[in-house]
Image (tube, rainbow, N blue to C red; front, top):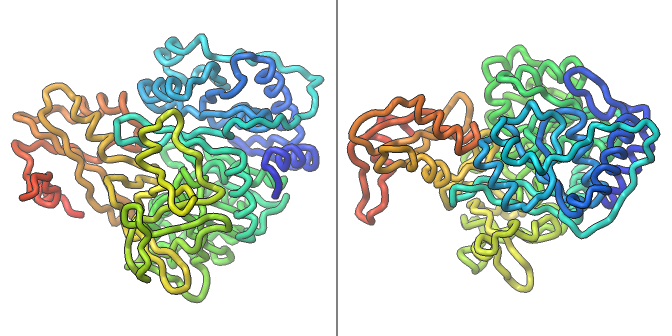
Length: 498
């Protein structure tokens, strides 16, 4: 697999009659995609404000995907901006990424306040020339894209991914032998601000395959199953909880066309693997792992083999990809004892060069060891004698909710700013049905406040996936002997369990 931009451009020319995208039931061929990409390339390249980067409002439509591909081919860094996220968060992304231009396929998807604040940045692209040229690759040293993830300071941090990172990822995915070809059909279920979406739409396009977009609906899982059944989808990547929601329906679900189902973004329980395998009898199930900083994912483990390795019911994440280096560290020192649990640190060709315009966070998160730059993942892992890794937990306050990275401190930061509140603490509870943690917000307050007011307030500060499942009010917060909040005692106080 060569540079993804060149592979993409070749695929656009080679597979003209193939279906590139199916969106809301409508097919778009590679020829149609090439024409739209070429036109947007012309618009972007001729605009002096888009020399280095462009913000792209992440609508799930043909023009938005075309704009992303036009940016990639033109060597312009794209920064996806989710229109349903709070204005404050999106304005912060625009400020820290210093974009001078924004592309939006549908202005009606935006809030009026956000549009008014940033209207001078929007790029007009109403003209659609019929005599467009062929798309072409324009090389640059700009990052391919920047994705913003949850940050402990209350604002997201930008992860910069280069074209070289993407090239290494594409080569390593090819090494898994997923059988991707021009007849393959991929399902894309993620928001475009979530890095797993890049696998779901970009990888298949490099091979001339088709991408089927799941519509944004409250019942996305049911829509996904319907698309898989009707369109004979062959490749799917989801977070485990996406499938966990379907547990009551497993007995009725049979998807024989699926060839490969990949799980990523959350700890994968072995009982989910065994029960889901019955629904996709002809498929291989892979557990893949990787933080956004290591470009989408950087390990794979085939869960469909004779032996399913696990750690207390959590499937192995497997071995690191080629040219990806894993190390278990205690601080800056490697841990050599086999089976020892320590923080997983990552180096190699898929590793980001750092966070965008955030030197303090870079200094905190990256370090040098034996001439290599390592990233502190915050994940606690161990390795067995055969070199397979096992996730055992986190060493900080970070969680994965529906695959999204969530800093508890970010939720606490914004929650504490609700008027009349003395203190805000987040405690986590289990959820057997959905196999994922739930966030519960506990306020120290003299009187109870209308929970709906709190939800409305937080909705203007954080994305919906970070909103607490429930809100509690207590007169006092328990502390342990070390002066830290005793969250175990607090859980008992409000009547929830781990």
